[in-house]
Amino acid sequence: MAVFTEVTETQANDLMQSLNLGVLTELRGIEGGIENTNYFATTTQGEYVLTLFERLTHEQLPFYLFLMKHLAGRGIPVPDPAANRDGDVLHTLCGKPAAVVNKLAGKSQLQPQAVHCAAVGDMLARMHLAGADYNRSQPNLRGLPWWNETVPVVLPHLDAPQSALLRSELAFQNHIAEGAAYAALPRGPVHADLFRDNVMFDGEQLTGFFDFYFAGVDTWLFDLAVCLNDWCIDLPTGMHDATRAQAMVQAYNQVRPLAAAERELLPALLRAGALRFWISRLWDYHLPREAAMLTPHDPTHFERVLRGRVQQPISLSDLV
Image (cartoon, rainbow, N blue to C red):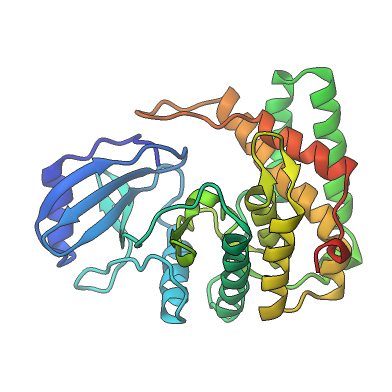
């Protein structure tokens, strides 16, 4: 959502008209984020989001785009990629893979209450069930293999206590991933990045999930853990918020009851979710790419969340 590739109004207008989306009237770069180039594109027919993919390839992208189409077709409120006359939803602009989706109604709820967390838990479970029969497969590209590759790259930038925590937690997660309980976890397509700024609300009504470009096939519990580590954490302190977490997990569990292996491994997967985002923020912070409007996230937040998850484990019995 930073701007890595500058798009002219003429280029955007040509794409919009090729998709039968009307004549461009405004093009505005979107700040925030660190992966792709995003613009709000307003036309005579409506409001859209134009994305140019800076890391994902033409070979990888159909998984994400058709997943959104699949979920939208099942009634999950997600952006629906626009197709050209040939039915293609993946396009090319400025030499980059590109997509255009409808802009969701509402706005992000950056100070969520229990009611918002319950809505996210409910819809996350519905999304998991709706995606269970999706016929494309791609691993979570920011999963355990990526952690193992990336940790050696960021270790030289850390002090001794940080390095010790990172090494020990990575070893722990490799151990967990080899166990029978982990193998038994239900899995399917996951969002894997469903933070507060990737969900839209109109008041207390959830109006959509978006930014699926970290999605992949992984455990559904990991997806829930990522949500708990953002929606149900006090951002200034990094502390667990039990009221919000209970609201989210109970709403999720009512739609898709959690399995025995999920109940066993929630504490470990909460640690995994914190580790994943600590590693990626360390990587973006210490090895940044150039981009207009790019502001890397502070990695110390998820270091703090991880320490909290290690020192004060949260079990499912605390939440359901």
